[in-house]
Length: 325
Ligand SMILES: *[C@@H]1O[C@H](CO)[C@@H](O)[C@H](O)[C@H]1NC(C)=O
Ligand SMILES: *[C@@H]1O[C@H](CO)[C@@H](O)[C@H](O)[C@H]1NC(C)=O
Image (cartoon, rainbow, N blue to C red; front, side):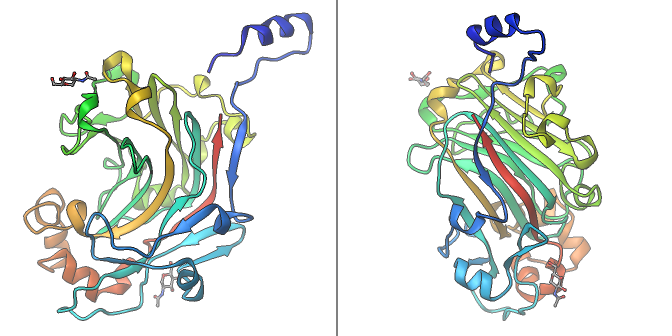
């Protein structure tokens, strides 16, 4: 956002005036209000993962969510062995923000995200579930590490949305030439740099993911903890000073009416298992990742059901999520 003309004019009159970002805090979610700001969904997983999403009451009573040292902990069940012949899945959290938003800057500060674990498929994302338009800010699966945190957009077919940013306008790398955001294809997708996901992200004490969204662009930023800009820490974030985004979905570099394709968004967190991304013996379990080989288990579903202890690191530890507009 550009500072308003009147603000610049006013600034000119005062010696001590400094230009600041036009973004101001409109929603702040942390340990003080998390459970009243998000809704838990104990419903079947739309992505058909090997998961059983539980209610907030059950998540709290079983310790799958709690407040620890002013941070929000959300884990998966890492103790129950599920029968191999069962069709049920591993317990986990799927939550959505009660208050949607349109345009602005979304900043998630994470001390820990699910580790690089075969079979897990966590995501921090936004969507308009009625009109379509999905922004996957931080998503990956299985034992991916540095090069596979994905920022991906999905749009409704009528918008014909594509992006192909020049390499010198983003830090990330286009995934597999996926420039077309149009559903039902896999989406326009950019992979993050070293340390942007899983165990390496956590080894750096976590970090920040930010999504800067206007009617003409969607930019995703990733900062390891040591590199978080001071303006974020100070609560006066100014993306114009941050340098290159990890992913630059700018209508300048493609064909997309960002305003029309991405209506009001709700914030989501979930950790599922297997499904389209982390599972399928013909797909990622055996081919995109080396999970079949490293686990010695031929299917993702059997591994997830029978080896709860492998999911000790599949937890979120969230400092805050903030929306600036
Ligand atoms: C999208 O593409 C279809 C088929 O080419 C076309 O009919 C439609 O007008 C396009 N829509 C937009 C918003 O460009
Ligand atoms: C489950 O994982 C948590 C970390 O999320 C860990 O503290 C706990 O010890 C694990 N439980 C068992 C039974 O290993």
